[in-house]
Image 1 (tube, rainbow, N blue to C red):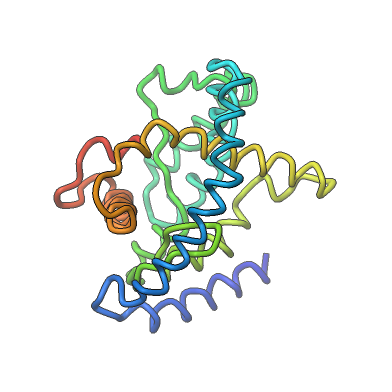
Image 2: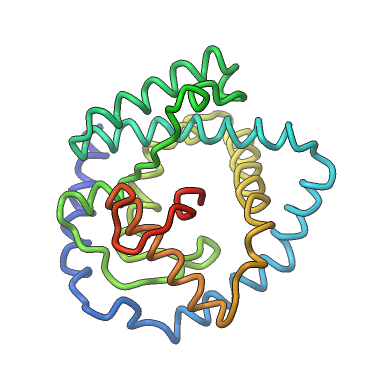
Length: 231
């Protein structure tokens, strides 16, 4: 725990000076190259696997698997809601995790959504935003995709500490479950990627930044549309 706290403090100190640039995308040329690399990997490996996963896995099974991974995400939602001083959201996350894990058979069924208690995503990047750490420039990470300096750093550090999948042993089992999580996530985007019009890089960048603003402001971001809550 002490090591985790020290790393989080280090992260805050490192993000603050890096995040002062006014230009949201000063590294566009490099970002475009990285996105091109990611797109080639996706087209050659990840998308075909996701399409095959959809072809052989019934819809109700895919929905259940997605619900299980979302349920595990409530651990992060709960912790970050507390860190952000949002007791109502923390209570919702805790309630969803407890009841979906029991009545919902380890989260296979999202029983709490039927009671109007839907998931409210929170991560450590949002927590740092609430604490006043700016997002910093937009950056495309190899294999991981769109991020900002703040959110990319937290995705690789603090968010991993709050991921229950990291506690799975042996390592081989953890890797298999994480691969399934990646494939399940990629499958969920198969239907929406065809909606991207114009320059793909610009569209993905704007969609990511709008989505992050929507999450940080709890859906109150200027110009945010309701459909952003579905991603």
